[in-house]
Image 1 (spheres, helix red, strand yellow):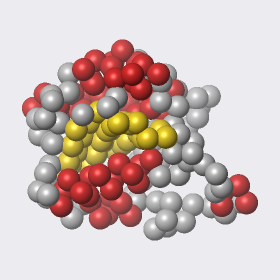
Image 2 (cartoon, helix red, strand yellow):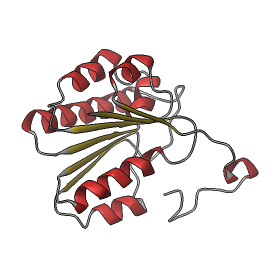
Image 3 (cartoon, helix red, strand yellow):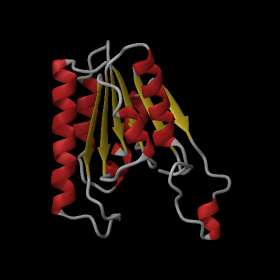
Length: 168
């Protein structure tokens, strides 16, 4: 089935990784492909201990916006799509997480038809998760599970920066 975690609140990646932990606990194979990210996090440290978990990041260390995105970011997003296609085709994972792919779509680093084709090609025995704010309606229409995480209050608004072990 197809899962979507979207919205402007904190916890979309965390929700998908909770699902990953649940799957790994049952001995299933997980692939976590992170778009727009290239940073060590507590989650990645924890998941690295599982031999049946593939982790790949397709981003750069700099934080990018729609205005600062460039050809390198498009190339990295393309590499992420190619890896996702390979994993789905070869069925090397039971759960595939495309973390922040919705943001890559919103920034126009990937064509919407590319991701829709990826979803449609997903074998029925594989759970596919797409995370990130601004999920397009075309993706919403293809999903089986949709969770919108809404920000009510966040310490960032008071100038508190991301904290190790909590936000990353």
